[in-house]
Length: 237
Image (cartoon, rainbow, N blue to C red; front, side):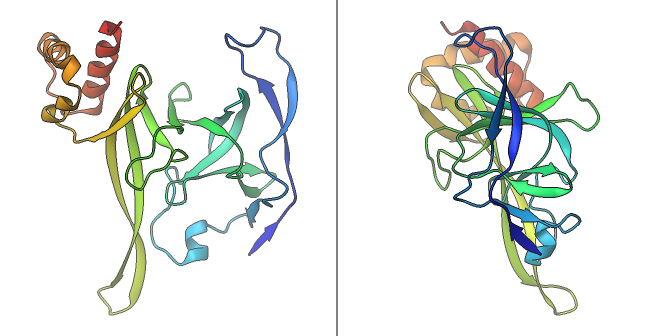
């Protein structure tokens, strides 16, 4: 059962940075746009069940603590989050209600803590140039955030088919794609997870080859790609 509420207020603290002073202040900042009327879902009812789809639309099936950072540097901390990959929406929990962050709110990034290690946070960012079906509002998992960023985009597609007993069903199919974002050129490029894809950075080919040799990288794992891009950024002036 779905119903609507006009607005919800959260206590936010100002994110400290170069443009802010070091005095912490509290702000009442609404994640919900009153004109949009945030969707709520009755506790215990899943998005997938409501839509009759097998599998999950979410990055994290359980509620994990995290934060939401807005483009004006306001940040909501220590809130329970789930990320709906299929709809590109951030869900958060408040008093047993599942609320959806309004698409009119200028979310810059959000982070979800690892269930086994609270110090490990998976960060998602948006604001990159449009490419393919992705828009500037599409959230990417940011593996390396620097002059040359390494990004991963999770995708959920719905497949419709007849199952083994002849009944029609709908289920989610998972996939992911990788991208490089060059901030100096404001350019995003999709790549494959192999060495040949790095030819899209011709100005850094020599540096990349040197790093791969020195670090003995085979680029077979996520960690090796992160090592490569962290080191590459360290060498770029």
